[in-house]
Length: 284
Image (cartoon, rainbow, N blue to C red; front, side, top):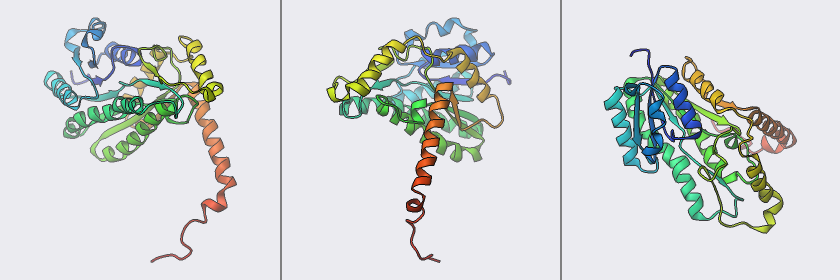
C-alpha cells in the first residue's frame, strides 16, 4: 500500500484521460476516475482490482462537485498523490467568429474547471506536504495557430497557472507540471471533444476554413501514440525533480522551436527599442 500512489484524473472516460488511467492501473497504482457522465467510466472499472478504482461523477464547472469528489477520494483511499487535470475540449474558430457564449463556455471548462479541481485538492496535498499537479495543456498553449487561437488561449492560461503553481508549491514539497501534447490519435477531433463556432466568416476561408478541412482529414491520422503519452506522464510522476513543462510530440517541439527562433530574431531586430524604455536616471 505504501508503494502505491493515488491518482485523481478528470475527464477519464475517453481519450488521453482514459489512456492515463489505464496506464496508472497497469503500473499497480490506484485511480480516482472522474467524468461528467459516470456511466461512461464503466470501462475503467474493468481494468483492475475494484479496491484500486474509484469512479465518481464530476462536472469540473461545478465547484461543489469538485470539493465533493476530492473529499470522497480522501475518504476512500486516505490520500491523493497525483492530480491530472485532463478534462477539457477544443474550439475550432477564428477569433472573430466565436460568440461570447462559446468563448465563455470554453473558459468555464478549460480554465475555471481546472481551477475548481485544483483548489479542491490542494488543501489535502498541503496537509501531506507532498503531491504532484499535472495539468494537461497543449502545443497550442505554447504557440498560436490559425483556427485554434481561442482554444490555445485557454491553454496559455494553463501554462501561466502551472508555472506559478510550481513556484508557490515547491516549498511545500508539491510539484506542478504542464503537459503540452501535439496531435495524438484520440477522439479529440471528433464532435465529442471538438466544438466549432456556429458562425463562419467568408474572409477567413483561406485560413481558418482550410484548417477546418484539414482537421477533418487529419482525424485518426494524428502522429502521436496515446499509450506512449500515458507512459511519459507516468515517468514524470515518478521522478524526484519533474519538469515544469513537458512538450510531447515532434510536432509540438518543432512548432515551439520555430516560435522561439522567430522571437529571438524580433528581439535582436528591436533590441534598441526594447532596452531604451527605462528611466534614464537610477532612483536609489
